Image (cartoon, rainbow, N blue to C red):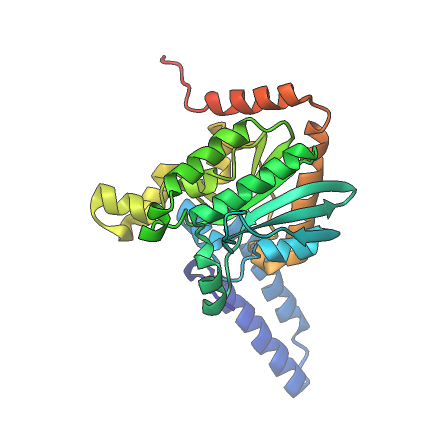
Length: 317
């Protein structure tokens, strides 16, 4: 299990509890009172710790190696999922996966970015960084859903669109820009969920939605805190300061009107209990579809347009 730096004091208490249980078992001593005291301390400390995380600590949880990915969620929240491959131009970018899904009693088009948990998987999924072909595949699936009047749900966890030469040569900027334009014109409900990292245009290319949600410890930003710190202070090590200044957390972005709500994570983060996290996400998806499904195509387009046009407005005092 990967232990984050700020979690080490909690792990020390948990190790002390294990040690006491072992001593009690081997010696026959009654240490139940001491064990209960330490367990209560651990629970209290854990709740306090995770309810007062700083932005850079949420950043670390969002990037946790064991955090559930798109394919984990398809198995846990979908009653059925049929993957649809390819962009119909000869390629199938594995960093974006999508297909027909049934969630509860709702039939949807489910699309998301995919990260791996091992080196082999990350090479297959390009560390969750889509190529232009991935955005074109997503666009094909958007249009398919629009034709058959199916709600669209996108799950986003990406450090950004792939910035390599091959992506530039095949039109990365154009592919993302076309997705922004075409998503704005969709006639069906669109729900986007930032489930881990939500970086720059790479995330936005799947997030022009009627409702944008974030997992409690996810982050959504125009640039990574490390990139921001490197530009502003010429020192990537100052990323905690950048994370604070960028307002990347769900609480900050709800207050700014960028996202519409946060989905509760298990105490300790989504990676600590896949089943609880998946149920919370499933409930949020079904609730969002219910809110939007009775709106007309024109109402959905106008609501989406007004939502994004209103971002960044301010009134001078």
